[in-house]
Image (cartoon, rainbow, N blue to C red; front, side, top):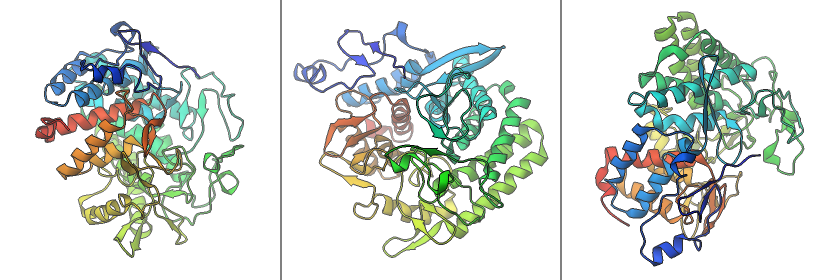
Length: 481
């Protein structure tokens, strides 16, 4: 596993390390010195976009709170600063994006990491080319293995770091089947298209990869058999392997798509993962539109629309439970036999994040609001943690008492209540542990106890949150807390 370490201008702190508050940060506050950028020095940045740099300066002028402004400047460009490697392969753009402290490209993470930069591609052709490279690499990776969730830069590399009972191919880092991974591929491509990106990446090869996505979704509806995928790993963490002999626990086919793993890379309890199926409906609808408009392929568009309708109806029939306290709401997972699991995962997609992903309609707003009340209720949602410094959704991946900053960000981004948005900002500002960056999770009573020092997706998502506030509710940034 490689790590890239970039010394900051003073040479005292290094990016990619857990920075204790007593090292530089506390002294900086005590001596009333301005916040010093934690970005890599210019020569060490992996990619520089003038459009992004201009946006950083524009947004910083709107932020009165110096600490919040400092955090935004550190976080928003973090994916570009530290995780991308761009090249040309046979004249085609190719972009490899690591998650941060793991030298592998997660399909989901890489899509989400560059997503907030889409509004700027028309102003920056190099940035557009970079995102084109991500789209190209996604399509190429799908043709290697649509069931894999993470890949190496070198497709001949063998994943010898773990021994697993599954069909591992060269170039595959990990093979955990997660419905949302393939949804993110479509989401990025559709968002890029809508942002008026160059259409040259939407070629015959890309369309073939999309057909493989639909084929994989249909296989995992498991109408006739379990399909070709199974996964078993020798581990002392039950969530790190799959139940049911590697296929996941039993389901009764009903039109929903099985996901053996969650977006947190933890195994599902019941394979019908509801937020991922909502995401699939939205993604298939987007893919149908692209197939029709870009390729004039009515047959494939109809196939996508038909599958989306089938999954959507199955959600209406099987995803809703009647909670004695919160009324009709969404389950997190179901099995088709009548069993359901009520909780949420802090990663995205989650039930909480459905509006952010454009995956729940206005018709279902009452259903979502009831679900949201449950998700944010301490004592009802088993993975809602409440501590001395913050409260938010946790999960089994990092432990029930470890809150994910992503869940706090998504809470703010999906809220129309200004007090809730401000509370989210306050908690994020109070829990970065003096580093100026987001982390995977932190202990509810002590932000200095956190997981993942370098988690680029959370950083970029935080930047997206700040920009959303600046554009929709700029007055919220004109105060210091």
